[in-house]
Image (cartoon, rainbow, N blue to C red; front, side):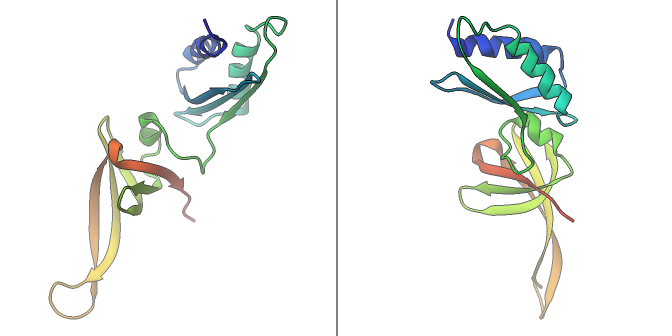
Length: 154
């Protein structure tokens, strides 16, 4: 079993004790620097990071393999990577880049295949002069999403 596989196994055990948390990213570089990025259905607390860090660190032997460990939560400006993050952020505004466009809109739903974004825009009237407010709704399959970031509205 490789060092990374052992770390992943220990992470899985630690996360099983906290089912509201989920793994976003795990990397182990050549110098055995372990970087773990977490997210949670209700956010991630400092104590959550400490608990997961201990679940890994206390079960590895530094005499056998020297390493450094960093456990952090996904930042607000970090791109969404897994479907569970989209479901967690329903009701928030996202900036979504697809191959051909960029949409900034409210995430109103997310399932296993696609997300639904809704927004209003001002467009020219079909008849006459001036503009009217139009409600827009778009289903975007996960496969079409190049990047999605939560935006903060004040």
